[in-house]
Image (tube, rainbow, N blue to C red; front, side, top):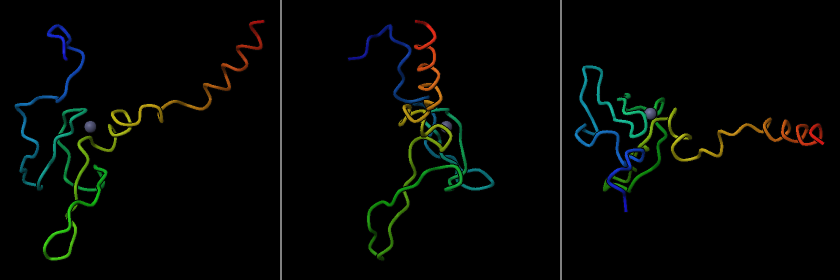
Length: 96
Ligand SMILES: [Zn+2]
């Protein structure tokens, strides 16, 4: 259960914002991580195949976080640099 004084964790950037907006350039989607709207395009979003439609084609679904936020939100462990492990190895040896 979420504590009422806990303002660090947010499930959604702003619940009052619509998930999608229509701009003169086309449809844009809200990123739940940075709260910015980005064009609904696989250049900005990771996609996955949705349900099979009646006409035999699959609908394209977009992840909830944009490409630049995807790893921050879903795979934070991937952001750790392997160099860090090497450095700590030398630190250990030098400290003795
Ligand atoms: Zn984002």
